[in-house]
Image (cartoon, rainbow, N blue to C red):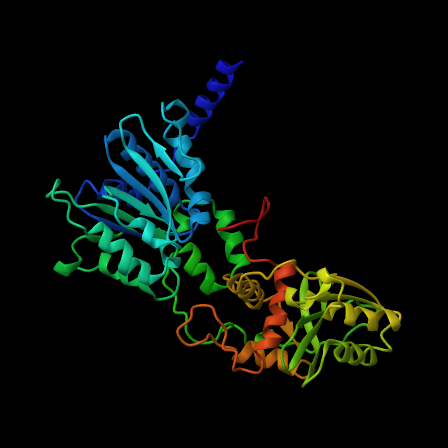
Length: 446
């Protein structure tokens, strides 16, 4: 029985080396270290093979080179484990090793004396003090620049007197993120300056690898800026308006049918207390109204809602918003949503609360709105009545990023809170990471 299990594991490890589509830039990347390039920089499109190539390169290097120390890194230890650990164990045939991998320290011990360490750069000091031979860092754009400057590059450039001619190497891979330190690395890789001789940039787009229907699905599901960043590995500027594709083309005069269900979305615990109201038609939201109150609480917002829609025949409303509005529920206290629902119930409304247990990431929330405002195919599927929803319109027109940030919103803008409310609604219905293809819907991380 044990022999059968061992055979199944070995077969699974062998199957992990399935054939890849050859791509000339990827093949050049595989030769880069042997060609003397210490720091290959790899801004490449999502799901186009860069991480798979990296895993195989690292596994082969460790299996073929004896008594070496290699690393596989990511911005956090949890990310590093998720990206690297199981695949590297399979690719190195770890079931057949005499010394089994350390599941606590995440180290693979190969029979030839080489090791592969999984490193998270949320604790960059763990990278120091080890004579590394080489490795790969994924999602490098999300590794803090300070860690790159103060921990990673110094460790890789530490002189080893026992190997005076050897220079450790590192692939820096990932999708571009604004114009930060990863852009600087990529620029060095495209430079002919003598100081940049250790760097070379290897770039390709997802459309070179992925099926056409998948690419069309991605364009349909993303804004142009997000598509160019994610699937064409383009370093897009992080400045300016967050919803810079929003325009008069997103304007519509909306007359609400009294039989339509209403969708009411909130951003709690801020002044002004801001909420937006929409109707959904063929999976397209039309923001047709809003409630914005200075120095108010959620109960007052609900009283405003039931008065405003007292003649609406369909007394069903879907309530969206931020998880912070649920505060107190675990301890038996009423939350903002409880207060809203009490007023709705008293006025003979039925309701469905649509609030996630935790906040979506700010980037995902923003991207869920962007792809509805205008996707990479130029299609618009979010509309606003600028006369009835003036704050919604102003929010999408004016909210900008905080200076120096690639995702934080400028909270000095009074319209920022209602734009956040719109984000909670869109994240519920159209979450970022969902791509619709001709064969169905693919969800998950890019």
